[in-house]
Image (cartoon, rainbow, N blue to C red; front, side, top):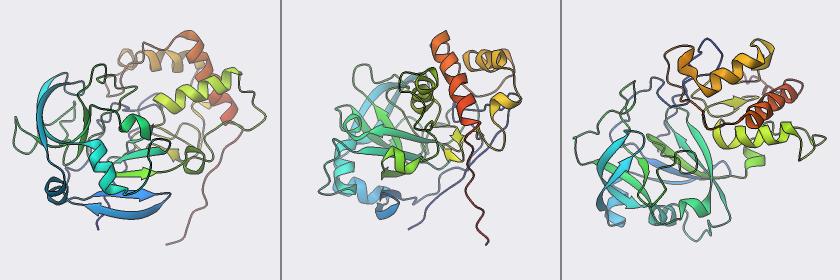
Length: 282
């Protein structure tokens, strides 16, 4: 079994980066496997042919928010893929992590992945070898989670990870033990509210204390973003990064003042609680 892991770290002028997942990455290899992992232990993996032989594919056209247009895919119902990857496991109450080869990592409830409308696309039927996606013109294959249900084109609630490499069952606290504020931070505090925003919208691309997504830089170590950039500038960049420079980080104009204040409060708390894993000698 081959595990692909290409972690990109593109540093932009503000220390935030391409959360649109358009950092350069190698094209997926032919014969790449989709791995299934439980709490850090690999269970099994399948090549595309294995999955298509076991699960009947469907063909459909759907509006794809990554391409911003309609696309036609050959795809497998994701519930059936999960049942094959995790036989006998009740995923309704599990937390799952979707990992892409470029370092994009997103946590999502198992119940959401089991919703009607979730599919694993295995072929772009409009262009052999997949149409490149994003400003960096990346190949999204060989595995791409797409959604075809009403309202499932919302990228915040329904992530569309391409270049998918693995699906893992993992509790958030065990996977990211140094991302949450310390226990003495009140649940109703601004910092805790900011942590929830970070967890839902930022962690898939960015890390805190070396835990989280690898598309963008860590925002806490060795220095916190609030230790070298003015808070007002950080907020403005989050809302509209293209006002600062041409890059790939998407705008977050939907975040209000309270949510932005919460993110800053969270960063300020975490700068006092830095953690870096020990370096293991080769």
